[in-house]
Image (cartoon, rainbow, N blue to C red; front, side):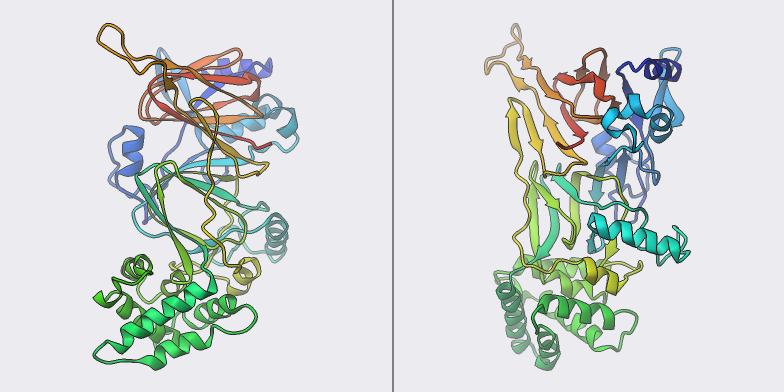
Length: 442
């Protein structure tokens, strides 16, 4: 289907499937192979961190056109196609905003990302307007808010293991971590209990976790002689010795060594010990709401969020950290890791629904129709279907899928994607692959 056909279809308000693509973002922490493997492509030779699928101006998807029976990158972006006809592309409920409310990503972490927090809606809007009024360029190093939107997000593990940090531990666990460090210090050749006592002394007041985070970030950046730097150095030394390997907090201590290798001397190394370590297995998910401090450490995942690029960093980064703004957004309430358990809405259909209006995620894997198969009676799969509430983006994993809607259909191969207008209504999937569908929430 050519761009002319799509445009004609949109002008007639006819439902369409629009194949889309994008170039992975080459952040230093990205994997050299995971996204390429997911897409069935050869590695580019650069670290590929995120593949963005959506209409966010930071990296809008590009439309794939058809010419003489071959498909190619048309150069037309999804956001421009939406702007040309928001009613047909987004549906009447979203046409007024002219904005696709979600951003869909494939994320591949080979090294730890920064500790970060995302703002709530009111704070994002106020912060964006405040920085605009102050004349801070959007590209400025010290800019906090790239847009006026919140950024709740969910991540689903695609790799067999996906490591992350998420939210603060209970205070009693933090005290247990420090007690283990004191034990390791006492067993060392040159104990330095005063250094650890300095850390413990800041764990006070009505909000002790906020107090210690503020001290670490305010006093611990850019001065190798500071008291915080001494604490970071000592904690790193103790956590990476064999003394702590039998501790109940051994995974957290092991992570310290990995963080120190990527961000030596960073106060976020100590902050990591205050947080919940999480290991997701394939298909398991986290939902990260506003205020939750988190970091992805290693693995391949499907990420879905409100279409925003607002990030307040809290360590493990050379980038800007605005401590007062971070503390204003940060939720220091101890929590269990916010696991989001998918619900089987129908055979072969899992839904990851965090209760957000901007997004929800489906995983489609058509079920085998029979447990019996042979050369003469090959195993067949029962089609699986979902009903759309609005526009959607389909991403296929593993093998081919055929997708049929109310008026159109398309074939998608491994690692390919398509935007779907809401008038396609119910989508029916057949084939041996797995489909991930991002769409709007209730």
